[in-house]
Image (tube, rainbow, N blue to C red; front, side, top):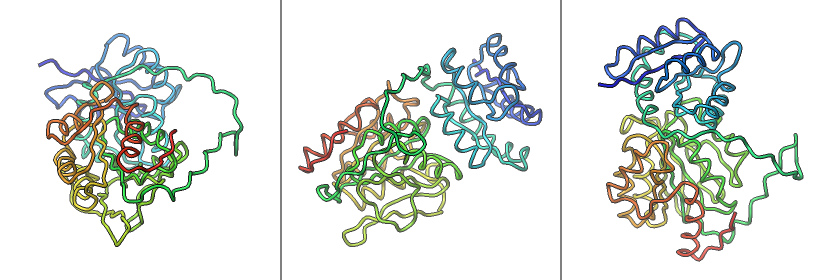
Length: 365
């Protein structure tokens, strides 16, 4: 067996030792080096040519984010971030995912040794996924054109278009896992302010989804928030399943409501796409639109078939644009999908489909 070669980068000797021990216990991977900071890691990567690196965020001489940005521009490779479970840690981790990190592991602030040992299956699963993931080089951003700006120099988001002309019956359901934070962002940023309500399950642990929703809310024309139990699902809004909780929808009279529940994992996931998509099939039926984005495994594939059988319109991200073509492939294999599309075409295709089938005058972005 050819083993996955891993370099661990962390300024904590304890964390380096624990991660190396966890990795070396696996029959299909080995820790070939452990670096105290990015400058040492740079030489290890050059000399050892690893398949995957695990990267701490806060380190001396150069922090993990600066190193990751340089790495993804000059020598793109699979990276799994190891971040602290704090609000700041969540913000920095989301930045790392934007830069091209495949996934992250949230290490506890206290009890690090026991915490990492309890996370060993999660850590090694993410290393395996990263080793097979599609990696792209980080391009330098183009210079921004001068624009009228609002508070603190940030271009103001356009005011939402009137929602009176949009049918409130349609709901868009999105499921995603590995690579999905950026894929979901791309879809949501391309939706107009008068889009139908959007309900999202992204595999993510507690403590990160609130920061993720806040980040998206500042980028999108629609409003984005972490879902709360019992709230109405409204056009022009997106609702993200809280980490560690299941999200589903139910109907109350003419309204659709979000249901957030702390029940057992489904398909080993919590939140689970299966839970969300099953409720879409049961409650929303032909008024639902399903989107399956990049991710490992099969969570949501069977329920998406139920959505299609109930009359929903379902699309999946194509292999070429996925970080991991797992969940979309399983949905396609289940016969759940009418269209397979590149990520950058999903939102515009969806708008055209809704306009053609409902007669709704959706705005173009």
